[in-house]
Every structure is written in structure tokens, then in C-alpha cells.
Length: 74
Image 1 (cartoon, one colour):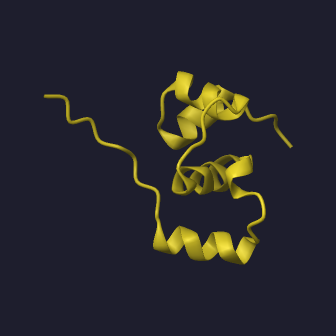
Image 2 (cartoon, helix red, strand yellow):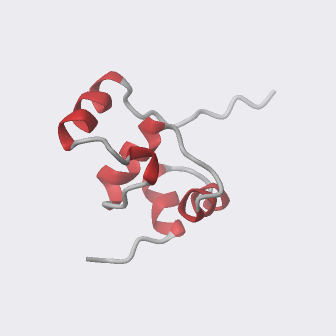
């Protein structure tokens, strides 16, 4: 299995590299939908998903799908 890096997470999830680094280091917790998206795209499981079964994650993914944030700079 490949090692997951902040760069890989940033690219897979469409988030900034600093944010991906903070997520991986534990400095910040992602929204659950983002944590599930990261799991699906990279195989890396954030602790925010601890205690959830695969079935529960599948259900949450349907209820709270991940969508990339849009930039609405004014």
C-alpha cells in the first residue's frame, strides 16, 4: 500500500496543502463528509471516523455527501 501524504490528500480531496497537512497531523479535524471522502479516495482513515463501521460510513456518505467548497470571494 502506498504511503498517504498531505500532497496526495490535498490533490484527491481538492483542499489546500496546508489544510491537508493539518488534518494529517491532527491539528485540525475535517468535517465528517470530508473524512469519508479522504478515506474513499486515498484509503487513509482519520480518527474522526473511529468507532464507525463500514456500513455506518456508507450510510453517512449518502446522507452527507462531500462537495468541494466553492470560492465566493467578494
